[in-house]
Amino acid sequence: MAFLRAGHPSEWTVLQGRGVWLRPPQSSDYGPWAELRTLSRAHLTPWEPAWPRDDLTKSAYRRRLKFYQREARDDLGYAFLLFQSESDRLIGGVTLSNVRRGVTQSAMLGYWMGLPFAGQGFMSAAVRTALPHAFETLRLHRVEAAVQPTNDASIRVLRSVGFIEEGLARRYLKINGVWQDHLMFAMLAEDWMTREVRV
Image (cartoon, rainbow, N blue to C red):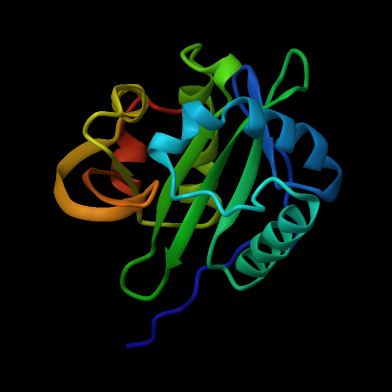
């Protein structure tokens, strides 16, 4: 039996959602990205891996872009910046990482929201916008998400979109320098086709 790698487009287009849109990051995004991440640092660090000392520098951003481009080229991951439709202002980011093909056909969903835009429904809209790309364009069978049990806002996002909680992964990810337990959520292609989660 042969396991074929699902095709993916060679040129990425903007993903339009309800009140938001996503596209891959560009070099010209550095200024707004660094400004938003700086403003949101205290808000984000409890939920993210430890930030390198030079994380917000232009050279680190260039390395980040090269990594994202290599991941997309090799069908290993896809990064998007998130913009508010009304203002075209950068408000966060969404990733589909750790893409696994063969018998798995899955990826890990990650996201971050800038502090001024948190709690306004933008991330739920962003995840809804990313799901058609995951299931219809990338032809994934499963999209997973890992959330710390104390991250109520992120749990609400996943549940509102239709992700199913599957259990607890002990000390699953090293977050801000400490191994943390995570609740595991997932959505299957079948769930996507049958649930009212579309934009």
